[in-house]
Amino acid sequence: MLRVEKAFVSYGRVTALREASLVVNDGELVTLIGANGAGKSTLLNAISGVVRLKSGDIWLDDRRLSGLPSHKTIRLGLGYVPEGRRIFGDMSVRDNLTLGSYFECARNPLSALLYVGWFLRRPSVQSNLETVFRLFPILKERQKQKAGSLSGGEQQMLAIARALMASPQILLLDEPSLGLAPTLVKDILKLLVRLRDEGLTILLVEQDANAALKIADRGYVMERGMITIEGTARELLGDDRVRQAYLGKTVA
Amino acid sequence: MSADQFVQYFISGLTMGSIYAIVGLGFTIIYAVTRIINFAQGEFVMLGGMLSFYLIKSAGIPLAPALILSVLITVVIGAIMYLLAIRTARHASVVSLIIITIGAAVFFRGIAGEIFPWGVDIVRPPYFTGSQSIAFLGAYVHPQAFWIIGTTVVVMILLHLFLTYTMVGKALKACAISPVSASMVGINPRTMALIAFTLAAALGGISGVVMAPLTLMSYSSGFMLGLKGFVAASIGGFKSPVATVIGGFTLGIVESLAVGIDWGPFTSAYKDVIAMTVLLLILLIRSGRLAEEERMS
Ligand SMILES: Nc1ncnc2c1ncn2[C@@H]1O[C@H](COP(=O)(O)OP(=O)(O)OP(=O)(O)O)[C@@H](O)[C@H]1O
Ligand SMILES: [Mg+2]
Image (cartoon, rainbow over all chains, first blue to last red; front, side):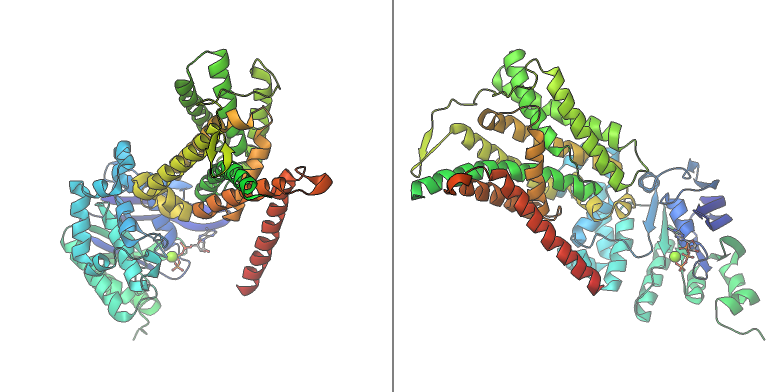
């Protein structure tokens, strides 16, 4: 279970999060929606340790994430698909995936000196690689290609696959649909449902509130750095404020 | 210049060029991973050479272990430099960190001029395998020159294999692309920075140890060697190891041939000026290109 308690973040004089709190229970798919600049990416960055909290707390089960730098939170079971994907464009698809399992090297520094081929043959790494190739057959085909030469959709799949290579306990995704064609967006959302059904816990930040709420179990609405509305996805889909502001519907 | 003379100068250019290349690689690795230009890179070379002389002559340690120990000590110095001077200044800008490396260079040179029993004198550690020149394509080549070229080429190959085929190598590359992205897959950018400094110190130490018997070494040799490596690295834009190596060899050969050609009264006085001229040309071309790119975007 992921718990964010009164997270407060500011960039210099700009306050991005004002005591935002949320909970993601095991096995849930929770979505976080909000307008541009509401602070959604900041919240994910705070959870993963890319930005520091000014105050507040973040827990993954009994492990405290707040205060840890991002390379440590990732090693504690967080999978992060950040805004803009941040894949290593100059490296091959396969190398990107391999680096997704880098946390194994942190546990066992000597394995970092291994020939990559041997590293990939470790049972845990190999089974993860097989899993992501099953989920994304296109990546298996393209594994020798430079990641930067993939299409936008393929790059997004790679970013998700790379995060899955760390066998995360919870997956954070920041607008995975950004810039993708509608059919691809559907594919990605379907994939998230499938991952949730297989037991993965997911926190999804999404611009398309309608699509996100249709697949999510619960949702949070963020405005100016605060969580203003929360509820089950069904409740939010029927909430007048949500319908007006995020679903583009006028209230009768 | 006769053909034999040409070969002679060419080989001596290759010898020095291989040193410039490997010093340049030290600059490139640190720059790629941390965006810091490490002006103490040349001092690592000086320390390697000076330590080898000290361990062999003053401490009486046999040649091979003394050489290995000199490199190891240089590596430890490089790691300590990172941990004490760079890592502790965690919120400093890259420019301040670069200035810190200049400070470290001055510090190393000052210490080296003080602690060794021979003070500021120039020293020559023993040749690895004598000084009987070997006839080669009409030229006479000092055996130490073969040691220099051979060692540096082997080191470059090992470095390439390390960076291309190990997990740390991939992690270093990821960090070179973006430290933030790297941290998002569990790579600690600071560990990578430490590894980069350690590798660079090893490259410096190794080159110092193999070159010192032939080129001699003093406490102040680091500056010029660092400068030459800097020129090699800037030919590669501090990014491409291959271009850095080509740059280093080119600089060595151009320098050597220029010294060999009879320039009348100016002969051979211009060796170091060539490196500076090359550097100025590169900077001019690059800044022109940067301006171009800025206009485009
Ligand atoms: N590095 C930064 N420095 C200064 N201000 C920042 C920084 N990153 C974000 N902000 C500010 O913090 C606020 C929240 O930004 P954030 O990126 O978290 O919003 P968001 O909800 O993800 O928006 P979007 O939907 O556009 O991605 C904004 O006002 C933004 O301008
Ligand atoms: Mg955002």
